[in-house]
Image (cartoon, rainbow, N blue to C red):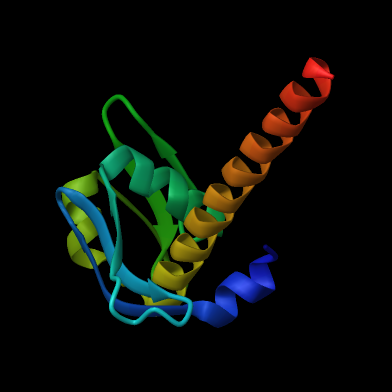
Length: 123
């Protein structure tokens, strides 16, 4: 699957950021009866936000995050304060969901490739 196909077929229903991490609920494809969720603990959430460019950098021990405020001023804070001041947008939620679905499709493709190789080895 391409990221364009995935992006067109994801409908984010809810998203939040809190001291326990990032939580996203969404539908994928035509099956609107099946809700999918992403629940990222703080460290995985920080990594996901850095990959999107939403934060500039971070340190782990102790956890500290650097990002730009909506007005462009550089800010830094620990995770708990970051959650209260950072504006987690629907764009970031959709982007995280797209990356998640794309990684799942790559894993499925790898599994199929390994199965094909195993079947060819049996011939």
